[in-house]
Every structure is written in C-alpha cells, then in structure tokens.
Amino acid sequence: MRVTSRRKTIAFFVVLGICLVALAVALNVGWIILNWRQGVLLFFGVFFFAAIILGLILNTGFLVREIKLNEQHDSFINAVTHELKTPITSIRLHLETLQRREVDDVQRRKFYDLMLLDTDRLLRTVEQVLKAGAAGQKNAAPHRVEIEFGSMVRECMELVGARHHLEPGTLRYEQARNSSEIIVQGDPEELRTAVSNLLDNAIKYSGKRVDVTAEIELSDEEHVVLRVRDRGVGIPAQELKRIFKRFYRVPRRTSPQVKGTGLGLFIVRAIARAHGGKVFAESEGAGRGTTFTLELPRSRA
Image (cartoon, rainbow, N blue to C red; front, top):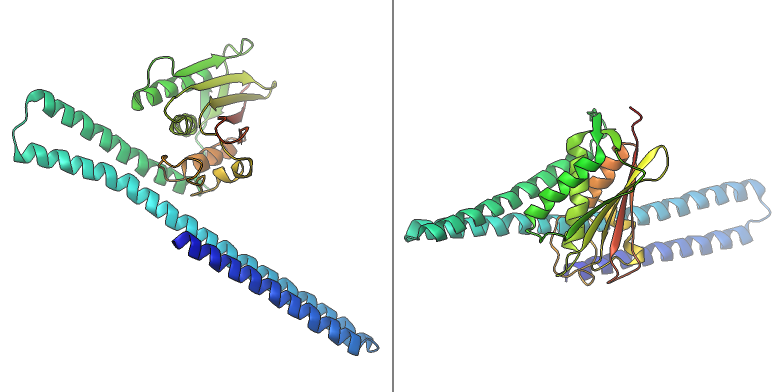
C-alpha cells in the first residue's frame, strides 16, 4: 500500500510539473504574439520564461528524486530490521529453552551451534552497514599491499561455502592457463569483502540448486578479471545498472524469497572504484542466471 501511495505521489508531481510547463508555454506564446514588436521586452520575456521553465523542471525532478530516496530508505530500514530481528528472536528462544528446562548434551550442542550461526548473521549485517558507511567516505586513506589474487578468491570461496553449508563441487574455481600467479595491489580486507559479497549474492540468488563458478583471467597486460557466474533467477535487463545503487534491491516478483539489505553490491562497486577498477553485471534475463565481472588493475611488482 505504501509503495502504491508513493507511486501516486510521484505521478502527481510529474503531471503537475508538465501542466505548469504547458501553462507557462501558453502564457509566453500569447505574450510574444501580443508584444512581438517590442524587441527589448520580448528578449527579457523569453529569458525569464526559460528561467521559469528550468526552475519548474529542476523542482519536479528534485521532488521525484527525494520521494524515491525516501522509499529506498524505508525499504532499507525494513530489511535491516528483519535481518536483525530474526536472529535475535532465535537466540532468545534457544536461551529461554535452556533456562526453563533441562536438555541433553546433544540438544544443548545443537542449540549452541544455532546460536553461533545467528550471531554470525547479526555480525555480517552490522559489518555490511558499517562498510557501506565507510564506502561513502571518499576521503578515507587506502591501505595497499601486494596480494596474490587467486589465493584470496579461493580462500573466500572456502569461507563462503562453509558459511552456507554447501556441498563439495557447488562452488567451482577456474583460472586461465596464462595466469599462474596474479598480483594486485589493494586493501586485503576490502578486496575480501568485495569477492565474498559477489559469492554471497550468487548463492542467494541461485534458488534451490546452487551452481556457482568463479573464474580468473588476464583481460590484458594491465588488468585482471574475476567473473562470478550463477545459474539462478537472473536479472531483467532494465535492472542491471540499478542493482549497484545504495539500498536498491531487485523487485520481489523476480526474487520473492531473498532477504538482504541492498548494500552488498553497492559496497562491491565502491571498493572496485577505490582500487581503480570496475564491476558490472550481465544476464540474459529472468531465470537464466547472472555473471558479475570484477576488473582490477594488475600489479607489476
């Protein structure tokens, strides 16, 4: 209901702006017809008319942008609230069970494992929010060291696979023959975050059957490319550029069961740009999977 209301509000301001522009055009044309012989007045009239039209367009665009931004903020707050509330509720339930009745050792260990998973989920959500805030601070001084990129990607795949309890062979690593050792310069923690976010995103949007491939190759002598390919729900063509915006999430009709904060890909793009690289997505459409490409400068050391 709230989304529908905002869309009606946006439509109202757009129609209002169009009507005001049309009215201003009609008044100006009429004024020109009546005063076409008075050159000086005509000049100033056209000048002020153009200023009024520009002001109306800017005002309408600003209002529409603010409404969309507020909608994204509300979606983000709802998503973060859910991501925080669910594990907290689960931890509280298990603690109350342990407090109120006796359980055997096997059940107690199971409760402990579940609570640890919930705390990991809480920690990841908080880290995503903090990293998104840090990504918005462009004045932060970068910490650069030389990193063997292939080893880092394999390490991230192992951690992500263990976190999602994936079967062996679900995540596959491929490296081009001409790229035995690939060195990049960058912040190790930030690059791990970027690679992990791409892998997490591919797994979340793979549906019931997870089949993800991470491939590294040298696109040229100056750059290294990481492609993370899944065979999941896919992304509509009109959404491919929007998914890297802060708080933006693909509409639920495309991925109705996927939860998240809408920050993961935004963080990846911010990290890629901070390292002089870029990231983009390719998909043949809904149900045909997605390929994310992360390109980074190659170190010559």
